[in-house]
Length: 303
Length: 143
Image 1 (cartoon, rainbow over the protein chains, first blue to last red):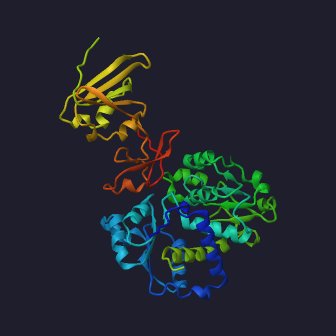
Image 2 (image 1 turned 120 degrees about the vertical axis):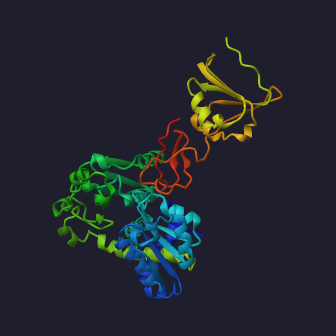
């Protein structure tokens, strides 16, 4: 039985297969509409999330399956003090596959180690968010036609942003990807990622100003500064609007540069950018459903 | 010159960096054993200048040597039988450590689920760096 804890759980070849399947789902969704009939997905969300949970639920419903679950810790047995290990043992009796989001890092891994059903990490604290990474990779592959040979700027909260950590780990396996990390000093990438990039002799740079690097980017991945990751409100207020992507800044970018964002967006991308054809963050959400459909089918061994 | 007698069966930890013997004594759990333990501090050493030595009269298999490797894997472990050295054990950095170090990351699942074992994996042998199996946070504990 397989689980998905971080993007590295799948080899590059396995990811290629997954993305081929997602592309086929996009092309011919009817072919997959009944493949999960009689199967149940449990969405165990210990912290609030709308889009990830709904994306999982939409994916399972598109496959003809059904969904059970909870959307915050208060309405689960966690409020009564039940451990993650006990919860997953119980959930294993109710469902065929589980998507778990938890504010504590490593919680889905604990669940996977005791689970009788495949567990998908749907985000654990500031640590990993592998299905967002699969979404990002599928979006890039579908719209750029490749996952290698480009310069990607990653901008915003690179310290606590789990989407960033997962994406960097995943892209580090492809050839000739140059990373430009754009963040304020306080929100730089964590040391373990920097060390990983050094160890693999991958090319990266860390800068503070977005404007300066815009003309060199093939992709720009914007992120939100997340209030919930800060222990100190003052730090959050000081850093939340550090970067705002505007129409003026987009004028400095290449004609084929794509802007991605894991959403939700707050102020970091001005709404006037939404009409720019290079802004693909809403398309990205649709790719998220396709890739979760492909993942559910793969982990349930239905393809 | 202070003399400590030979031991018949047990082990001698030699070439311990001066001053680290008490840390090893506690981390190996020697304080909990009901056997003879001799701790020699600041012994003269041609190579090290000063060194510590620990002699213990007990079966070596009762001890978790992983912790010793983490403290300093260059420490020499001499296994003694019938008063003679019968084996010199080479310490290697263990790939995984269970229950030896604690994860200090307040966001880690181990911070709220007390019964979970604290597990670290060797992420960088060159830098002797261990990371938490759950959250990937660097070990910050010093021995």
